[in-house]
Length: 246
Length: 246
DNA sequence: TGCGTTTCTTAGGAGATTCACAGGTTGCGG
DNA sequence: CCGCAACCTGTGAATCTCCTAAGAAACGCA
Image 1 (tube, helix red, strand yellow):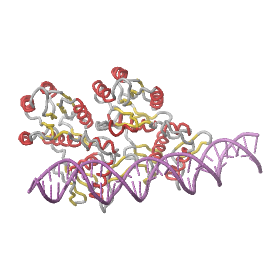
Image 2 (image 1 turned 45 degrees about the horizontal axis):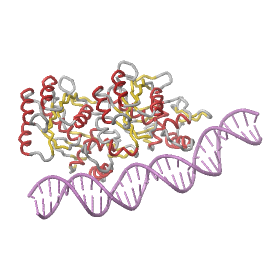
Image 3 (image 1 turned 180 degrees about the vertical axis):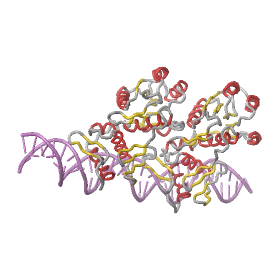
Image 4 (image 1 turned 90 degrees about the horizontal axis):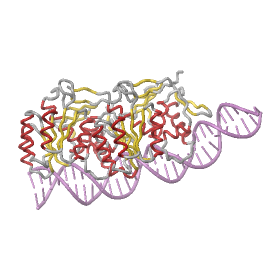
């Protein structure tokens, strides 16, 4: 089931109308904090754990609809945690967090069962999107909730990563795609450069804030080129996207 | 829930009808005083603390709906305070106060969870607006409260920063926008130049008092031009806005 | 490894915004 | 009707914000 808040944000809900429950497992407090904040903001109910033992225990009585699991935990191997989790919650989808250089194929094998993973350092947009996808496909939330964002004649498919405006297919790079997704998930709302940076770029990004301007410029070239503009600048405030009509 | 006071001000209330509670944390007494006064004027219940320890304690039994938190506290790091606050009050939104130059490094990730920040020196109007936004989106106040101010045929949307009169879109600069918001939040009420200066300009503004006249003039040109005027001068007292009809 | 793609930094410039200054206008008390 | 105080607004300069070109660095893939 989905519901639309007064602000226009679409929220995932379970079939019985209660909020989706997510368990976050990571030993770095700053990461669990960051993730908890971001996921709570999605309207989900969050519980976190700092090690494998805690994860199993929490899973037992929290009964989450999805788990975010760091593969590098202090007390036990990621695969062990996964196995025990599976014994508690056979069908719960898991989003793995792995270091960039971690063994790719081992993870790849794990995700065959419908799970997914992101590499550290991640962007919150990416984690949230992957998680939404997992929950949607697991059937914990209503199946009808679909993965296509639409603003005016602009369309973005979160599953296929296809973007089109007025029927024309548009190729976007990964970063452009995430930026556009963030904008489109908040149509008609001014988003500050800080918000965009926090959400779309990795949490360890230390660069210049004008990458946002740069990518907005790229997006405009691709989706607004020669058309009625949909991306607007609010000088001193941020950017927003809205249908070209109004 | 929102309710309209006899003066015509719209107040944010919690679902049970009690006033919104805000905790202000800053080590400079002058700042907490300034903020407390301004926020009480909004009809909110305010408690303040001068350091991290006090903040945690106060949060524990005051149970605020939002927190204003200076990132520079004498006894502990801002992020530490945040972490402990979150343990007490997992869902409470936080408005961070930061120095202008600290924005780049320290702010990373702060807005990710729906929190927000303003840089010192701030304008009260900005703090109040951000706080209202946070509270509105957190769901502590009734969701029906929306972000659109209406006075007569004049409309101001705090989310999209759009302003229109009788259907015509009007472009305002950041300062013009804040001034108009302040006027529209206090319709039919005379606001003195001093009040306006205190609210809309940063607390350290050292310029000439006639910037207010200047900006009122700008606003008139944009929203009253060729129409029934809505902005009126009360000689020797201040300015007020009201529907053109009456 | 090598090549095309993507990401990000730097830097210059265009234009918008803010504000001071100053001269003009209006309203009001005497 | 005068004069003063309060208010209005044109002008222009300093500043700030944003846009984008160009190129370096990192990445991904064959």
